[in-house]
Image (cartoon, rainbow, N blue to C red; front, side):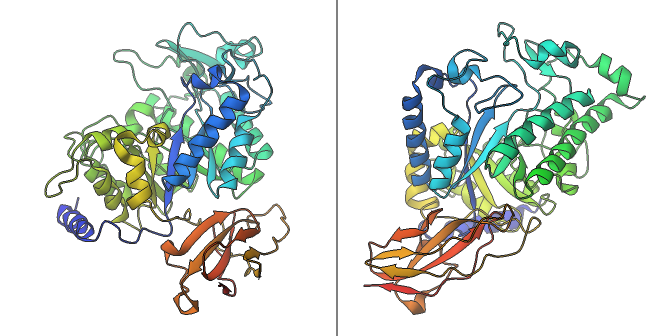
Amino acid sequence: MNKKFLLLAICALFAVSAFAQNPKREFRGAWMHTINQWQYSKQSTEENKAYLIDQLNLLQKAGCNAVIWQVRPSADALYVSNYEPWSRFLSGKAGVAPIPMWDPLQFMIDECHARGMELHAWLNPYRVTTSEKEELPVNHIFYQYPERFVRYGSQLYFDPGWPENIEFISNVVNDIVSHYDVDAIHMDDYFYPYPIVGVDFPDDKSYAVYGNGMDRGDWRRQNCDKLIEKLHTTIVDAKPWVRFGISPFGIWRNKKSDPRGSETNGLQNYDALYADVLLWTEKGWVDYMMPQLYWEREHKLASHDILNEWWAKNNNGRHMYIGQSVNRTMDKADLAPSAEASQLRSKIEMSRAFPDGIHGNCWWPGYSVTRNYKGIADSLANDLQSTIALVPAYPWISTEAPAIVDVKAKDGILSWIAPAEEGKVTDVVRYVVYRFADKKSVNLEDASAIVVVTPNTTFEANEKGVYVVTALNRANNESPASKPVEIK
């Protein structure tokens, strides 16, 4: 690691004013998990809708532009699924639909898009239950094919070694992508489960059939590789603009295990979870990686500083977003010479020190942001995410920009016509409204000039100035600026 370079970069960033220009393009996500979030089952449909609207408003105020919404916490569904039962975390009992009926995923898509935010549908691939006491509904696939499942510790899992399970999970993903206007499919760090000391994962039966004499670890990694490749193909075939992202545990491998690894000494994705996440970006099977760097900057076994730079240098041409722990970040005072009471500023600025390697951050959990834990929402809204940011574009999906928007103004209302959607990546889905002091000031790189990102084709210009509008397509490519319109 080039420690001297990193130190100089961080010092330079700290020397800049706290209210310096924030990036125009930056992923600013928040995870909203549903597993063990029993408030949903205790609230009525209308109360849940009001609760989620409030959560989204608070995240938007804090500068977030994407929500990672957990729709399949454990082989269940918070949406209308053709393959799996309704989640007990929504209705209180597995397999029971909410009353009155509503579709949380569709609701979240609509509400996020109305705010110019993205919705990433978050799935856990292999987990089926969270405890021994949990009862599955009678129509669960487990009862049809019990031989394809294994119990490890107190939990039930799909055995990744059976090809039929890869096909089933692919069908679940295709069901979501085909029926919902999601911006991405997201999976977190749970592939093969975190190891239980002294207990090996019980996949002898599937290994005996499909192992072909391979090293058990290599075979398990191959099973995960096959799943990721299959899901990539499934998504691209259904809707090529829908992205696929993975949020792995923060260490790929330690350098003592592999010269390509990081200067760390923690649990390894490759060896413990059988997730060769570097391979997935090298092969182009995923569009973004979101490593969970939840540790403190000075952590002895897994320093946030070391891992931030390592992942920046190992993005393999794909987007890299850093998963940040709200509580650990806000609980820990920053390192000298900083006098900050938390490590929030340094971690964000550190990610921005590698603009070609890191493209944003994601906050875990989003509920801690909306609770304004130790003032994080205030700090984001008033400073570190105080300007509106566009989600980075995905050039490997498409580089084609939309046509220029023809904007008209009448009685302070800006309006334009949306082009017809064709079911292509080039479809326009959002618009960016900018406000400048005068025509000479028009500069689309000025993030502070962005007034709103919206799916609407009208905007009420309440302040004097010169306005321009641009269009964003499904790959987040932006059109040139419209002809400036002055509002007096």
